[in-house]
Image 1 (cartoon, one colour):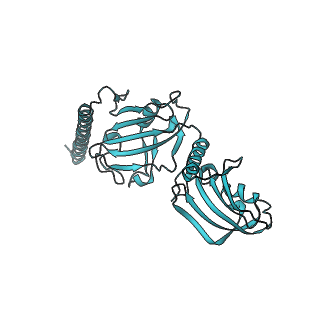
Image 2 (cartoon, one colour):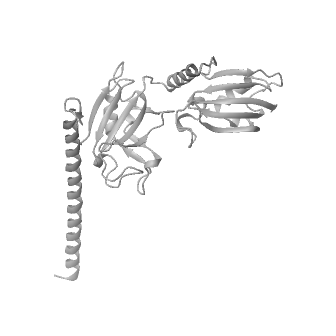
Image 3 (tube, helix red, strand yellow):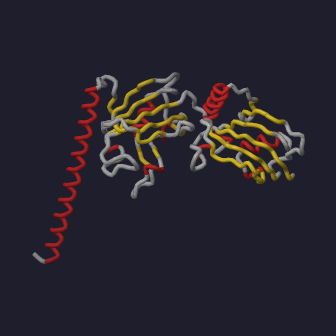
Length: 307
């Protein structure tokens, strides 16, 4: 046997051993996770309510609140939030921001992304068919619970603050609204009622309260340069931006809510407005303190205008 043949056989042997070791490790994790989930279901008397994945991949889901109306279908829009917890300890690893919400077509809800769960080999994007399966079992406003083995979740490397080989307890909460504008309107009107505020609703869906009606120059349109003092808050009262000295900009460069409302008033006007997410930072948020699909509010004073 020549040296080349010996080397080839040695290489094949090493590869075979490594492959067998990896396969054995995977099978061990799979067996362990499945046993953990089966034991949890049995101990908590969930045998009759937990539905095994029809494809028998390993996850289970439970409808904890069915919602109302018709069951979701793949082409439907769904507005929802996710809570990612540890099955063993109950610790919450991730909660999608409740000031806003996730939103997509049901058929795409398996595409899960969160930048905090990025790793050296993953940008934070995961494929979780369990989420889609659970939502398809719900009606708008329904809630489902998913028990997901680690090998279908974040694996042996974990992600963010989620440790290695962690079995996941995932809660999917859908909203009764299938249009973002309706959910935003509900959030704003609920906030106004809770604060005892009476506001006027603009045709755009923006609500506003005029505190001082100005008598100065009219803002002619979005190409005008305005100087405005402002404070911006999310509906939980957190300030995300403010300028008490006056901020100058061409109105067309500002968020849509400002472009719609500021030209309705004259210089000197002080008003408060409550802006649906589509007229604020939309489905992308602002990349920081404002999550996606979040209504916001502003106190504004129009200081001056250059038309």
